[in-house]
Amino acid sequence: MKKIIILFAAAVLFASCDKFLTREPLDFMSPETSYETESALDKALAGVYDMLGHRNLYGGYFLYNCGFDADDGHFARNSPSTGPAVYNFSSTDVTVYYVWESLYKGVSRANMLLANVDNNPEIPVEYRDRVRGEALALRAYYYFLLVSLWGDVPLLTEPVTDPENIFIARSPAKDVYERIMKDLTDAEDLVQDITEIGHGGRISKSAVRGIAARVCLHWAGEPVKDESKYEEARKWALKVIEDDIAGHKLNPDYSSVFINYAKDEYDIGESIWEVEFYGTDSEVYEELTMAGRYTGPTSNAASIGKCLGMVYATGTLWDKYPDDDAEDTRKFWNIAAFSYNLDGTKKFSNSTTYPSLFYRFMGKTRREYWPHPESENTSINVPLLRYSDVLLMYAEAENAVNGPTQSAINAVNEVRRRALSTGIRSVTVTNPGSGYTSAPSIVFKGDGIVQPVAEVRISGGGVQSVTFERDAVYGLSNGRGFTSAPVIEFTGGGGSGAEAVCELYDPSLADVPTEYTTSSEQFLKFIQDERSRELCFECLRRSDLIRWGIFYESMNEVYNLVLQEAPDYYYLKTFGNVTEGKHELWPIPAQEISQNPYLTQNPNW
Image (cartoon, rainbow, N blue to C red; front, top):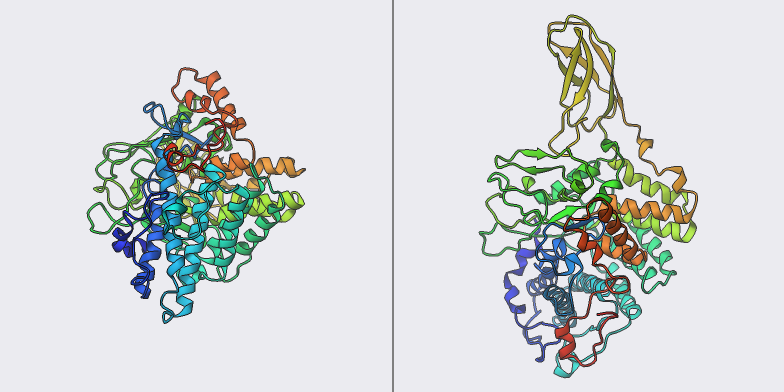
């Protein structure tokens, strides 16, 4: 396994020297004596990557404590009642400060590496360029998160070596976006193809291009609203889609994408970029995450490991999926219909009352697939960019430029057809047979990956009906992986002659309904919900709603639904706390403003 984090054994070199806006110059590694070998460059680059997995970012806070799930999920506790997760916080909030600090640490480390990557010209230029490209892309990504959260932010592209240089003003978001795209454009030719790397743990050409598409979509949307960037987003997404060398494709089974993250298995067809973690709470060099510890179905089972289950899905997310659960298998994977019993089995919930739909755990992160239940935290990898996201970004950008063209519709259909059940849609008893004194066993003879478990009911000595039991993965009950209808056989029960036939789901059931392809506005609305169905709980929803200009509207819609259906429930406040014109941006941390007289505060903070 190519775990970048292993290279971070020397990370202590960064520990006390790269805080943004410190009153002392950076001193970490003397440029005259460092960056002189390939190993030193790799360790420095690992230090830049390392901030992605910090507990203040994707190793912790981003997953549960920052409110990034927006209308798809909510903080699964009624205490504390303050903080970004519940949209009740101020400029002195520690989470806000820690995120700001960690992102600027990432920028600082990238700046130092970029300034010194060419110290030793005897290191092959190809090697130095690869390091340079990854550092540029990482700096771009950290700045993208900064501009998404705070809007105008200080823009630093050189190491801070003079104490006076820490006092700088915020750069307009437009300028920050321009710098981000310059870094990504420069990085594209320098980094490797993903097939050369062999995994999604480090930045590849596909990652650069996909993130560039994401950046351009945000640049085109609120608050900067440079709509010319839709065409740029379209071009960048197409580069990923049309890259024959990378050959990206969807994993045919949605759940497998996330099981792979838990098992530390790579799938470069779908997972283009992921944050890597390493260790089991018992190793000298490790970096662990709260994924599976704080997020996922709750567990106290010794065979599974402890999960606190701190993120619930919302009823509005549930409502975006079809009533026939098997028409979209993402429904019961993303919204866990269970918790773990003490013996490791699953306790399923069948209630669909509206209040109960706000008490179902996010299900994408499941400890049962991570093989170290004894460890408190996990090394489950966290996705940053998946191919399905690229397809949906392309469809959105194409729609903005050219309307709902067939190529845009096809891209969405590709995502949706993967989500459609490949199990049995229905069983029709064509001959009940006779003489049955007890329910016979039923066998499905076909090519399914997962055979359904079914119960046969008899009446008057004949087979009356067949009902399926839930499977342990999706919480569905109709099997998976069939390409043709299986043959049914009944055995036992004392009778004979019973016959039945199966019908599978028609792939066209998943296609975008015609009424959503009649205009750009209708198609965009469908894509907005499709991104929720596909990408919920991947730290994207809040920023998506903001760039579409519907953040307050969407949160207020949830508030009104809860007010009507469950006015006494604690989570009502989370959605009611959102203030239009305020919570679209986070406040600049008060500590930074107190140190830098050139910093100004965001509106209404």
